[in-house]
Amino acid sequence: MASIDREMERILIVEDDERRRSWFHKEFAAYERDTTHQVAVAVQWLLERDYALIFLDHDLAAEHYELEMADDGLTGYAVAAWLADHPECQPATQIIIHSLNYPGSQRMLQCLLNAGRNAEHVPFPYLPSTFLKSI
Image (cartoon, rainbow, N blue to C red; front, side, top):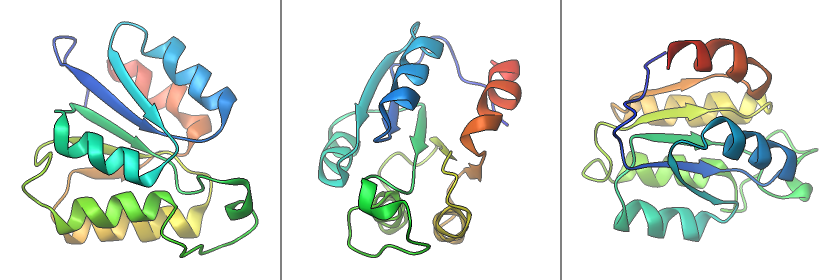
């Protein structure tokens, strides 16, 4: 997993769970962070701001939690698909899919990799042990 430069401007966190959001804010307190659970807000920020790292969750609403493949346009997959369709936006940014929804995560990862994006799936419980050791 790539490390992030402490001189970078921002990290985008797309996550709905308040406990996870709190964890991200604590672990990345030294960085500027933008956090949202809304696809439209994430896309708007991707157009307006530069990110060194993007964290994507798949299930962004309680109604998604029990579904293997939610396709309502309001999941992290919609952000991943938007990034795949817009290669000019955030072209070199590392993307970490941290969702525990494995089918959804794999679908997001495949979409991003097929578009040539720098992406990987690291389930949330493994972030502290794998990601933070590399920064």
